[in-house]
Amino acid sequence: MTHKIRVWDLPTRLFHWTLVLCIVAQFVTGNIGGNAMEWHMRNGYLILSLLLFRLIWGFVGGHWSRFSSFVHGPATVLAHLRGQGKPEHVVGHNPLGAGSVVAMLLLLLSQVGSGLFSDDEIAASGPLVRHASEAAVAFGTHYHRATGKLMLIVLVLLHVAAIVYYRKKKKQNLVAAMLHGDKELPQVVEASRDDGKSRALAAVVFAGCMALVLWGVQLAG
Image (cartoon, rainbow, N blue to C red; front, top):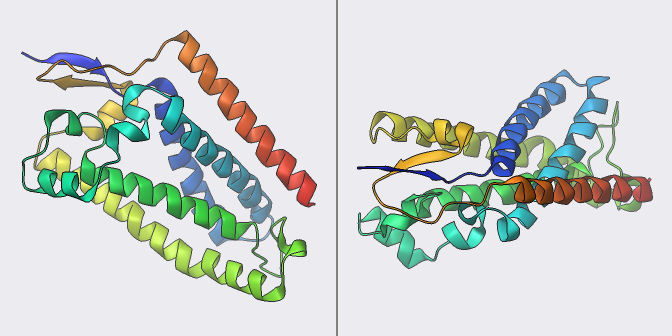
């Protein structure tokens, strides 16, 4: 007998798929260059707003979206790799997948942050370029266009490979759960809150994050 549990609340799902589209758009506009860089910059501000939202939602969001539910220490990760983990550790992000989530958030933050200091000397420059030294701008530009971009590509490919592995080898459809939010589980566990009030809270949090980013960009300019 299985139990249908709401694992991923709607705000988390919207964050995830919007971020996916934004990352794809960044690769496209960044490679096109020219006038497309204007959209590259705007999309970067949206990504920063999404990341700030996710950081806050990691403390006030649905149960399985909170960092406390999936960020564990090395001992828990090793136990999971040995097949000795607790059942509740695989409801949301498992201990190993949690590392990928945290790495992705940190890498995206560094990528967006370096973009604020980047200058392609042709069509676009970040809003903080005028406030930084030449050395800082050179470092930010190199990291954003080379090092950070490469690491992000590698991490995205690993993420996709893990999804395929779980689908083919473990018969777990991780994509479907992130679309409709529910998982069929053998045990009853706490469900993530996903009602009108929590969704309204998410909308307010995201609006605040967007306003903060836009205010910061205008202030820098």
